[in-house]
Structure formats: structure tokens, C-alpha cells
Length: 126
Image (cartoon, rainbow, N blue to C red):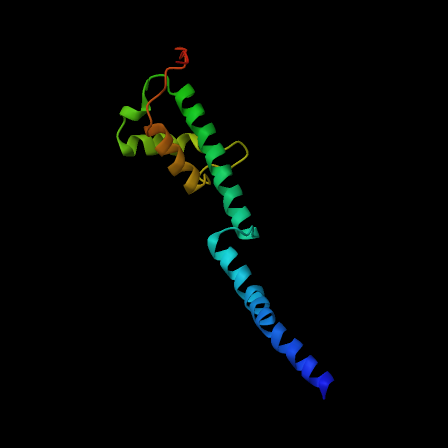
């Protein structure tokens, strides 16, 4: 009898820890996934796509500003003119005409709206 009482006392002492471990095993991954602390393939794919769109839009902006010398500041153009300019230059090498990505064209048009920075001036640190 003494042995059974010891086992029961040990079991009763471990029950709260076991309940906490069970809750932690279930809630822990759900919480970290919700907070964005867990890296999933969906997160990585989204970040890679965003980086590709940004890189392609930067190429589009550089090509548009270099080729359109008549337009000194594309940011002074209205939205439809910037959009047309972006559609013209957002086509990447190797793509067929009319297959430019919508996200790249939009990002390029938004980047063209930003004024051209004067790179020749050197800023001195204060």
C-alpha cells in the first residue's frame, strides 16, 4: 500500500507539468506561426517574389530613364503617361511582347513617380 501511495503522490506531482507540456506542444507552434516567427515555404516564396519584382522594376526604371532622354523627369508626367512608359520598358529580355508582369509594371510606374536624385553632389557628413 505504501508503494501505491508513493506512486500516486509522484503522479499527482507530475500532472501539472504534463498538462503544461501538452498545452505548450499544441499552442507553441500555433502562436509562433501566427506571430510570424516561423519560416514557412509560403513566407520564403513571397519574399523571393517581392525581391524579384523590386529588382525587375529597378531595371525597368533605369532602362526607361536612359532611353527616354526627352523626358528629363518622369515624375512630372501624369499617371497614364508613366504607366505607358513602364509598360514599354518593363518587358525583360527573353520575354515575349505583351507578357510583362503586372506587378513589375506597377512597381516601375511607382518608382518613376519618384523624382530623380542628383548623384553628382557629394554629401559631407556632419
